Length: 333
Image (cartoon, rainbow, N blue to C red; front, top):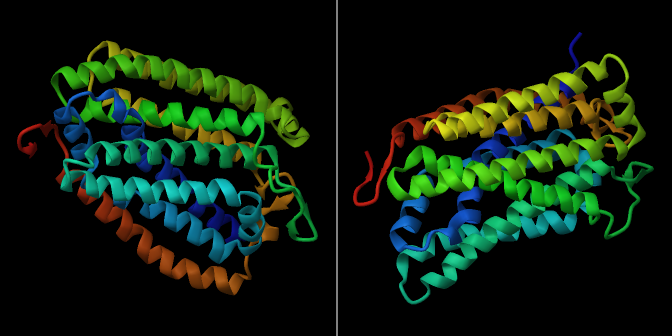
């Protein structure tokens, strides 16, 4: 007999992962925005994500809304624990979105909106990383409620994961620009991607080493059979993705570095899932305990089965329509 709560955990995990890999590269564009010194390059970078950036954030809404609807206890625990980084992330996304629209409508204030676009992207990425680190290190729960302090989310580990996400998103952004552009801008991004790739791998290694020490259960899972097998398989997969990234950059490939960078994020997400399972809020709140009644899960699942394929369909269609390189003078071609 299948368990509805675990199906829903998979759906929400899919939504969050899709948000990370899709919105990650356009946040990365914002993080790299100050590296573009000429207005022409800035316009190309923004135009490369203009048709898709707001649609990418649909998955954040689905993940957050799904958590509220089907795992209300997890939502009630996570929100007060991570209230500050989540609010800062949302405010940063708002500033970023406004800046994206307004910079095209003014010359006098364009430098201000450019800074807002960069700052919003940087803060949003950093806060996502901090929230992830705080969740990995564990949230204190007593009597089905958050029992920790106001600043529990802020630690050396969560700050480390914050920087890791910023560097990783910048790598995705650089690889996206490589995919969508030609000429000097593309060549410059290839150079950035090599260093960002090294930085991302360094952060992955450091966070991976520290994660098992955040909770004894993590340590047991990774260093006792059968989990110890994954301790070999996952690093090997990361090294394979890294090899594909750097060989693609060296060979002048356009698509391969982007796919390899996405693979690094997917593998890291799988690693986090292995550490968490069967908890939804580590160290003690399980998926089954946090789930809403089955009647609610069934009701929400009916709508999700209809809506998710529709979202995937129009997202795929948008990417297909706006495939190809950006012409700085004309747009897509």
